[in-house]
Structures are given as C-alpha cells and as structure tokens.
Amino acid sequence: MIDPELINSFIKAHPFYNELYYFEEIPSTNDFAKKEECRSNAVVLTSFQTSGKGRLGRKWLSVPNENLTFSLKLKLNISPDLNRYVIFFVSYIIFDTMQQFLKRENVGTDPLSIKWPNDILWNNRKLCGILTESILKTSEYVIGIGLNVNQLNFAPEIKAASISDITGKQHDLNGLIVQLLTDLKNNIHLLESQNHKQLFNLWLNSTNITGKRCSFSMGNESLKYGFINSLNEDGTISIETNGEIISYSSGDIKLMDY
Ligand code: BT5
Image (cartoon, rainbow, N blue to C red; front, side):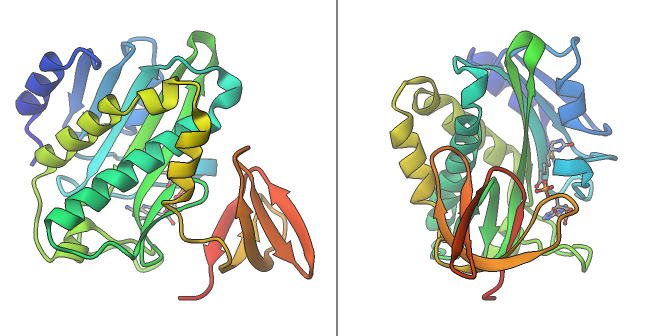
C-alpha cells in the first residue's frame, strides 16, 4: 500500500521536488500533471489509474495498490529540441535503479534491458513503461512512469513482467518510489550538464537489442522485418531490411528471438 504521508515527508526533506499530489484513484497522473493547477517540480502519484495512458492512444493497465503509477512535472534546464535526452535520462536511471535493486535481491540482471525508445524489459517482457510529454508553453516536462511491482497476473495479450515475478517476493511500494525519486534527483546533472554524450553512452550500454531480429511498425504502415543495426544519439533507430538500412525517429519494434 502507498503511504502518502511517508512519501510527503521525503518530498519535504528534498526541495528538488516541491509538492506531492496523491490520489487514491485518478484517470491519469500525466493528465493531472499537465494541468495548470499542478505545480512545477511536483510528484503526482496514485494507487489506481482508471484511464492510464500509453503512447499513441494506447492504454496502461495496472491493478489497484500493486504497482507504481506516477508522474513528475519538471522544469528542466534543457532546450525542447533536446528532449530525446530526457527519455534517455529517465529510462537509464530507472534501468540502473532496477539493476541495483535486483542485485541486492541476489538476482542476476542479464535479462534486464532498455528497449528503444523507452521501455524497460525483463526477458522481452515489459517491466516499466514511460510516457514523456512536454508542455511547450511553460517549457516543462511531464514524465509518467508505470512500474509493475507486485502484480502477478496480467491480461494475456500483454507481455508484462513485474518485480515480484522476478524475485518471487512482494515489495514495499514506498521504498521503491523513494529510491527512484532519489536516484532521479541525484543524477539530474547527467541531463542538465552539456555532456550529453556520456548520458547517451550510459543509455546505450543499458540496451542489448542491437543486432537482434525485429519487426517494426509505424502508425498504419505495414509491418517490416529486419535487424536492429544501431541505436543513434539523435534518438533514431536504424533497421536493416533486405540489405537497406533505414533510420526511424518513432515507431514500435518487437523483438523476434524469444
Ligand atoms: C508506455 O506506452 O509504455 C507508456 C506507459 C506509461 C504509463 C504511465 S503510468 C503513470 C503515467 N500516467 C499515465 O496515464 N501514463 C503514465 P506504450 O509504449 O504505448 O505501451 C503501451 C502498451 O503496453 C499497451 O498497448 C499494452 O500492450 C502494454 N501494457 C499496458 N499495460 C501494461 C503493463 N502494466 N505492463 C506491461 N505492459 C503493459
């Protein structure tokens, strides 16, 4: 169970964040964070999203009280044309936090990987989804994070994993979100410094999909099959199909060799 008082006292002690909005139930923490009434540098957290959002109108499904579903509304010192680094940053920090957490649980972390553009996978099953939106008017970013923690049964059409699947134990949601908020705050220099190459390399080294067979789709275009040739610092993915390499800036890949 989420203990909003405990998380609030963490936030009060760490002025990097300046407000916690906690809801037992809300349609979507990202949608709330985008409202004017939500302050900058806030954490919006809920125990149950009734209309959780994925990218491109898709849904994020998470049962009450078992997982983390939250959003950060951050005013970041990074120009809007560099927003791909926000995605690199958040996915790398969540990956790293999960890796450290699983190591402390004595679990080998080879199956953990970032999947382009912004999923964290365990053995090709999605452990965490991230939805980043920018508010152009105020130059703020809304970063929505759905992390499967204690849920063991998912709808069959979803290829999901949870931390509990991996460790065989139930975990404290409060400890986990405090760890994630701490790691995001303590490493923000990776994003706000001008050394973006270092951030990109950390992100790249946390992926293991280069060279893998995949299918690729973008909007209504038909599915293409190929090999992942490279993941690039401009945020694109290069896919080789029949000897031709094409780079895409958005879309979805599915890994085939599982
Ligand atoms: C994402 O979209 O993965 C971004 C998910 C972001 C969710 C957070 S929760 C807090 C915040 N508030 C929101 O309203 N959203 C954010 P995408 O790459 O489009 O993936 C969506 C797809 O993931 C769905 O179509 C399902 O196939 C799958 N999916 C849905 N729920 C899942 C879950 N709990 N675990 C794993 N996969 C899931």
